[in-house]
Length: 319
Image (cartoon, rainbow, N blue to C red):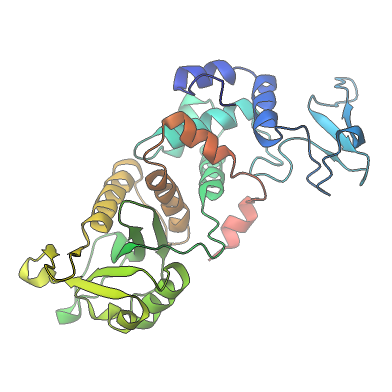
């Protein structure tokens, strides 16, 4: 893969011009040493058999049979592409379009440009791709200087008295390693216990925490090496501590929120609370791969498709 030309839009259109070429590309990416059975993980090439394509018996190209478990499979089995009737070349072009976009791509745009049969199908394609891009943390904790903040996404804000309660909006908490990664989580409410739980789950105890002066971070102060606050109420946005040499600021996480809101507002009319985690999974992925090229971001994203299935029924029933 490394010897191939950079994956630009024009190059993607060439490489994925047919379903067969797209399948061959994905096979080389997913199975660099040859097919591996997704049912039993058998990678012994002497025990993997190619089933010849046959139009009359409706055997499609790229079908294999495992000599160990006797199951048949293709390169899409066990991925977000499994059981899709959309041609694989359209899937890969859609993947490139979403990964290469600096903001976001609407389902209507995919439907028009890739000639997808219905808006519903294009919408579900976008969600499958976002689901593939979602991070598997597996206990991988953020470290160094970590900025934490919360924002609200959605409809018009209605404030009631001094409590500043926001209705018709969904709260999102994001954690940003300074000059590093971001990790966002959609929450039902913002309070001390919820914030503390998120910080414990995603931030190492050796980290230096930076927040604003909100009281929801008070309990978290004792969990980390240090906790520096900036007081936005007096228009303080950055403060250099001459004694410790630390810069107290939340500019990085606030910048991420600003870009995310512009991206969402500029592309989508409305996002429900139920689906918002997938949109932030895409935003997080793009932020975390911001220093790579569009092509490499696409290829890295395609490497995350395995082991991730998302069904339309599951999206409808999820909460």
